[in-house]
Length: 459
Ligand SMILES: Cc1ncc(COP(=O)(O)O)c(C=O)c1O
Image (cartoon, rainbow, N blue to C red):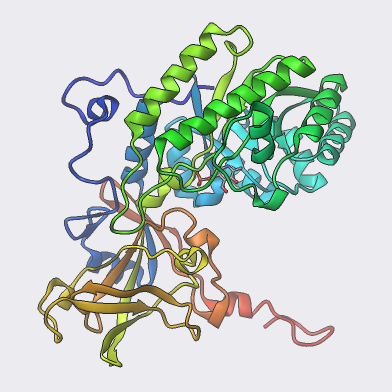
């Protein structure tokens, strides 16, 4: 597979600038000149209501093109669907030629419905049910990443039952992948729940080589999430290649694919910097050249599974201020949506950038000046806070507010059932055209599914 790449960029166009490593003057993000995805926020709010997710697919294009332009031709991209499984996002990335990384049977069915070529899809995840593995085999995926010897055996058994051999990647627990090569990998291996240690990697590779139903093609190792240091990212890819080479030569299979996972980071807080793609690309180009010179790695392709980098900056959570009050001398704005829809700030303790879009936020409000403001949601928990004491013009009731950088791990990583508010719609925008890529879901839908007594009926 090879994702559609831009034609060789000419000097002066944005792709050329990115390929040269110039910093774009304007950050590639959903909020530009007070507009969301190029549209007046009030128009979006009138048409789709608040709160709402807004995804700018042109920003997704920009992120994907910038990454593709920076990477050597040996790299393929498989979008990590878990970051944002919205169909509009999937279709958009698929049209650009990207593959996908799925982590469940539901995600697999979704990408197939979205029209992705199964030969561009990989499946990864620490606990896959038999039916999910069988669906992957039947679909003819590019590779299934196995995370334990037990899973490898189940996969072989299922492949035999279906009469269809399956290509496999073996997932290394990053700590052990590092030990094998005596290198330091960035990474949190989730207290051992991901991948296999060195002993099991060797057992799994040996069994895969011996099985007529499995075809071992390489190694998978995920480093760490949200890494914006290009040196750390490149070191992880290099170490994964070295480990894959050692394993393949030791056990005796042809190395065809090295999957270094996702983890490419984006800035969230005001002071954070963007990932330097030119620096990352330069080091990966050197790696690719070394692979070309080595017969054991020459034929191997490299795969990255970015999620956050591709879609994170493309998404905003648009909400309206319900109330503003002063509590203990501090301004507090309460929105009509909160962390039940955008859990990440509470989950990882990181404040997202919050921008006031209309009315007093522009500086003409009832409380003049820029003051520390806490922006919170309507939930009955102290966790429901987007920013604490952020210095801004205090917004008035009725003003619109955008929580930025929620295109990845936003809607999909939240807890929309808490307090039984409506689920916000997901609005996609491309070239200035907006549509409800998923409509608002009324709480009476899921509350109505409940059954209060044995033999009772729903609703
Ligand atoms: C196996 C795998 N690949 C890719 C990703 C995507 O990571 P990111 O969104 O940080 O690029 C994840 C995230 O958890 C993952 O578990």
